[in-house]
Length: 284
Image (cartoon, rainbow, N blue to C red; front, side, top):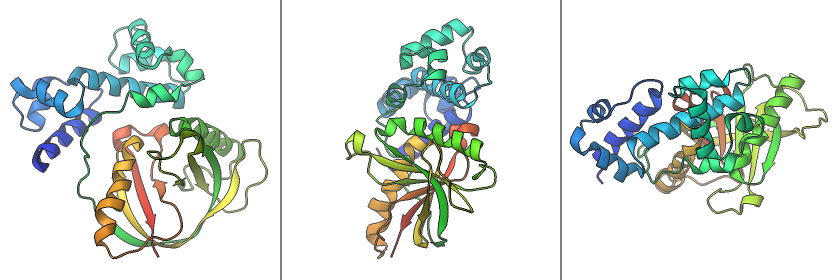
C-alpha cells in the first residue's frame, strides 16, 4: 500500500473517531477519502481487519466503557443511548459479549485486559511524518505512583493516583502538569516486570500516604519532542517514530533517562480523538 492510500484511510479512521455520535454510513465514509462505495467494505476490512460496522461498534463501546469508569455519576441508560443502543438491555448484552462483564460490573471492577485486546487492529502506522522539536526541558518535581505489572492494568493504577490527587489537593489536575514515565518497552518486557510512573507536578515533597505516591524528579535537559494526537493506546506509533525514523538521521545521542509523556489533557474528561500528548525523548 502506498502512502496516499494509507493517508486516505487515516482520514476515514479519524473521521469515525470524531463523529462517533453521528450516523456513519458507508456512503459518508467512502466520500471522506474519495473511495468507491461499492468496494469500500472490502477495502476497509482488508486494511483494518474488521468490518466498518464492527469497528464503529468497538469504538462506541470503548467510549462507553471510559464513561462508566471515569464518570461515576453518569447513568448507564444515558451511556447506552449515546453509544447508539435503543435499550439498556441491548447495550448490556453487547457490552458483556465484548468485555465479559456487564456495564455495572465493569464500572465497579473493570477488567482491562479484554478491554485492551478488543482494540488491537492490524492497521498500518498512521503517523508517517511527524514534526520533531528539540527543547530544553526544565527539571520538574513530581508526585509519582509506580505501576508495576501488565500494561493493560495501568488504568487501575491511574484511578488510584486520581484518588490521591483529589484527597491530597497537592497536585490539582487543572493547575499542575501530568506526566507518564515509561521505563520498559511493553512489546518486549514480561508483563509482570513492566514499570510505568504516573506523575503530577508538585511544589513540595509528598508526605506519606496510603496510595504509595512518592516524590520524584524528572531531570532537566535537552529533549526531542513529538506531539501525539489521539488515543493513548496508539502512542507507541509516535515513540517508535522517534526511535526508528527521527533518531538515526538526527546526529543526536540519547541521555540516560527513559522516554516520558506530558499529557496536555486527560482521558477522564476528553474524547479519545481529542487527546494531546507530547512525547519526550531525552538527549545528551
